[in-house]
Amino acid sequence: MAENITELDTILDICLAKIKTEGWSIEDCLAHYPDHRDMLAQSLRVAVRLQEAQAITPSTQFTAEASERLKKRLQTSRRKPTLHKKPVLWTFSPRRWATLPAALGLFAALSACTTGVVYASDSASPGDPLYGIDRSVEQVRISVTRNPNQLLRLQVALTDERLEEAEDLTRRGDTEDLEVALNNYDQSVSDITQLAGMTGEQEEEALSQLVDQSLSKHQARLEVLLDKVPEQAQKGIERALEASSKGRDKALEAINKHGDDHPGQGPPDKEDKPGGGPPDKEDKPEKPDKPEDK
Amino acid sequence: MASTADPAFSNNETKLVARAIKGDDNAFGVLYRCYMEPIYRYIFLRVGNAAEAEDLTEDVFVKAWEALPGYRITEHPFKSWLYRIAHNLVIDYHRKRKPLALADEELQEDPATPPLPEDVIVLNQEAGVLAEAVQRLGEEEQLVVVLRFVDGLSHKEVAEIIGKSEAASRVIQHRALAMLNKHLGG
Image (cartoon, rainbow over all chains, first blue to last red; front, side):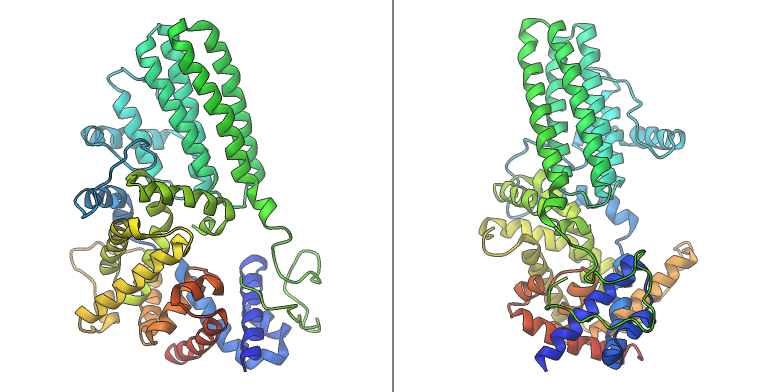
């Protein structure tokens, strides 16, 4: 009995994978496994229906407010947060909340102007009156971006903006705010490495290329800055160079981990026709080698 | 958030969890973003009410935050630990609350609410029907089918959460699917 269940379960997993990745229908699966047809039919129909529930998501309002609400609850919970060294993906500080209406307006305007690709189009730098609004707009963008790959792309664009801010302040000779800008840059690179570990296998190559090219260019730009800033600011640039170089290596390692850790993973059978379409009715049933988890 | 199953994420997750254990709410915020949706789905299908599921989802993470100092990274994966907390909260919720006619409650229209697009209504209706059928299963069966097919966990992960063997998880799944098929009029 247990063996039968294991075998049926393995076939069920194979069928669900085929339906998801190769467009098989339930009928295709049943035709492929005629010996298990009756048992498989009921399990498969229910399992497919359950999988459709993956589309269930919390309301937009809940999602938009979730981080801030939870953060407030943590602050009043029995265990108070103690470290605040990395303002990573949380939403806003109280000071930033004050700029939210303006930020939302700006975000709406930016959204209306752009064509889906995120470009950092604002030009304020640390010390500028509008800088808080710029960063709030970014936080709104981060909080509404749910796809990990898109989030990484966005973070790369934002990191580029951090560097532009440092370049702008160097041109203006504002070494005090330059230090802030460089700290922000280091933090932003750190966020890239963190997000790189969360990306999916899709677009692995494109994302690697994006991170590699962006951060490599940053290093060249930082080298240029190094020659331009006074001695007291050089340490910050050197630190940013190191952050950029190490961050690039770590991010690439994290993105490319998929390929190393999933050798041969994919649809379980290898005897299907090229193109992976639904099977012909006379195809031989697959016999799973051994039961495996999905 | 299928990416949470990736080894690269797991590696990163361990670091985030370690930081959260030390009290870093920013790190916990990243974990929240990663797991909020799957935990919500899991809870929704077990309570059948969107608003209650949202509140309970938040409660899961507050409880997790408070319990984090006692969490041992090496003992159970963080994800399994979160689901256990969610599972216990759902049980508490059902204990405290008398069963309601789920479909009526969930699908009742609020006159003040603007009408939803047709595809959303269909999804909500289907989700309500499914949630009602899931809730007619035993607790263990509910847990296994939702974790396996809605949240996409492996039998190994499910076994860790329910505290049984992988073989037991398969048997429970088999039984649950047969019962669900009956409840859904198959």
